Length: 193
Image 1 (cartoon, rainbow, N blue to C red):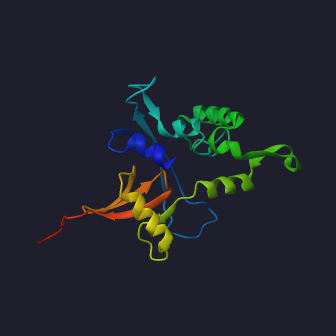
Image 2: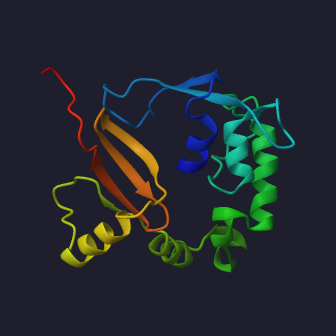
Image 3: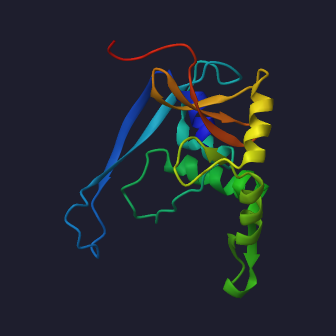
């Protein structure tokens, strides 16, 4: 979902629509929890069959099965103006078992209610797990992994910039290897000198 949002939105002008404000739940005593503002983001598509059309980002993610829908009651007024479309698409994708909806099961003990299949989701999460070697002090790169990465990085390899620490330091995700690494750019100096 994160990569989908990044590829659609980074560097693009989007339209933000403020939808509603919701206060903290009444059973929460913490005064620091203020009101939360909710909104929708619309992106103008630059290619494909929807080129030039403004699309709701949340609806596109539901359509791809990348996120789940927060279900609201029929009388609930604090919800997106596109909630009906979101709910319709959510039902379609659950039925088609698209994306994360592929990891659902029918719970006969709960009256045939559809619930997440946690075992399958956990197995898929393990398969897709990304190892982050970008600088956390508790993540030391094992020697055999370091040797392998150095060898592979000695050639050109595709990566996605995840974060920019500064002008000379980047966090890069390498999809083919399922790792994140921190890179310091060679032969430049940044700062006052």
